[in-house]
Length: 379
Image (cartoon, rainbow, N blue to C red; front, top):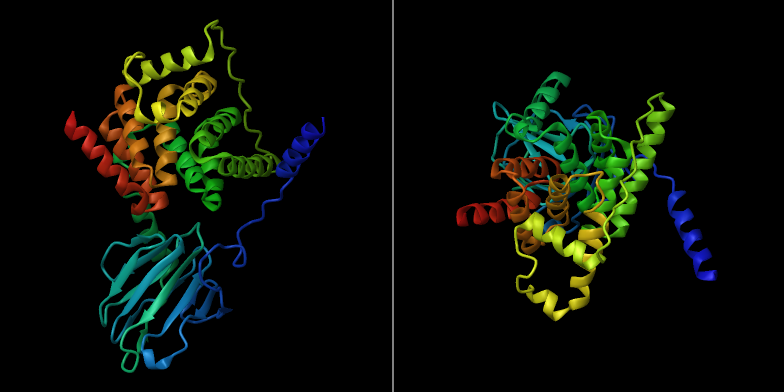
């Protein structure tokens, strides 16, 4: 009884956590926020600066720059060029006359001398980068006119809609599932809120979206699944307060099957993968038979038998979650192969990865593009 009460207390404390809107202080980044330097004639929006180097003899001044959503600097150039290293959030860089480049943590921008450009945050995301001054003794910045709201809107909209036409091979519902699942897999709570709103506005019910998050725990763990559910609760409550009553939807149907759970899960896996149920077991199943039993009894029975999502939708969600987790390409091979067996086309999987690229960056999409190419080449 004591254990049960402790469990209930823990779950109640989880559900009562208050989730605050992102601020400069809560924005997670690896370097100090520094001092606020806005209002500033060379920036539109609020910006913070933190010098990162102290030894002048090294001759490489570096600073961490943090932008609030929508903030950007004015058009400018550097007499001796500049280097940028994106470290947190989502941002943009644009040279005069060129398309804007969407930036994610780890991206590097090399700016040649005297090239007119601007950089800053995405409209819906905080952003931070390290700015490295090249040849500081002769490197003067030439500040020009501000980036107008129209210039900024056009640049960011064009970048975000890069794959819009290609992605139409997925339904709007499927695109919403991919966005929710990939952000959940990465643990990107900031961008989950608009993804949930998008999913609700495609007509998904609260229970269907919850099902994506329940499914996610099997691939990215309870902590990320529960944190996503907390964000979703907040979104639903905020919409209700605004007079929007989203449909809860039906519950999962009762399963009527007298076979034991292992047999049912084994057969579900055989059906969606095309691999005979009596095929030799994979190496992990022989080495750790308990995990193989859990996979069959729980994942492919308890989860896949729930009919709030189709098997096709569950596999699209699974590949998206794995992309967000990263570093699990062997599992992606198996699930992308299941997708193809279920009739999901390579073009649709490519569209899934387009969404991952635009939401999380190429570091998350490119490893699975290689997996997709390998699988399709074999076929």
